[in-house]
Image (cartoon, rainbow, N blue to C red):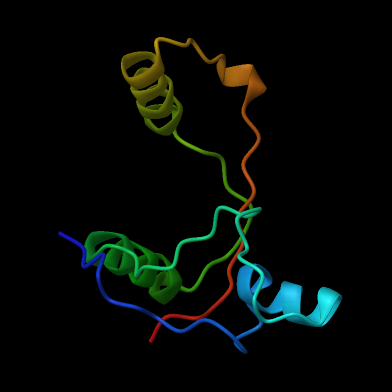
Length: 100
């Protein structure tokens, strides 16, 4: 389980969510509700999987397994009674920090 009561200060870390209001509007008091950025550490299982991927050392282009699409489609159908189509997916991977 993750700790959702642990505050991680993200200001002055090049965080789009927390540093853009200061840079663009010169205001530190704005709440950045316009971006869905996590303010909690990733689950240990996610960190482990990410580190394993990085440690294997090859960063070429890859396809996504059908299981990924299926799990997202099934979750969306179960949670929201909405059917997604695989051909509508577009993945973007953004790395903001390097894990230790």
